[in-house]
Length: 184
Image (cartoon, rainbow, N blue to C red; front, side):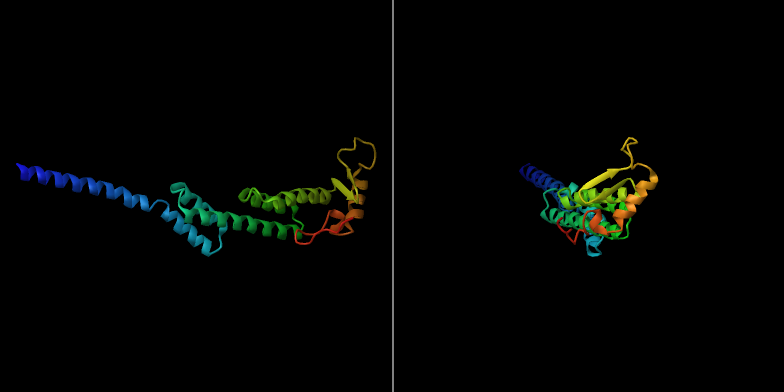
């Protein structure tokens, strides 16, 4: 009787150990597949996809320091990638596309105040391009909101735009983000 009780105790202990070991192996793999995919995207500098995969890995195991590090790196680099794209589009005078790129950069990095200022700049430049607002040093004139008090006709708005835009970027509020505007 003692021998069978001892045998049952050993079997019960073995079964409990196996049951505990199974979840531990599954627990150790939490987020590993997404992390590996993220690393592949990171190696090929596909930062947007890498950020997505690292987000999935972090959702599985939020306390994993490697997941956190690579997630933060990928969102920073994704933000910088969209900032470069925005600058390139702005140089091509695609202000709406540049605005959207800067908005995506801000979405990845909400503390990126340069993205906010660039979005505001793109809005102003697009308004000037469309002839809605003409800026001269120290003044702004809106052709849409003057309530018929003058200089609101399309002809005068387009002549204002041509007069101010012929001076280059300095008339539009400064240079590129890499090139600070001259103080007035």
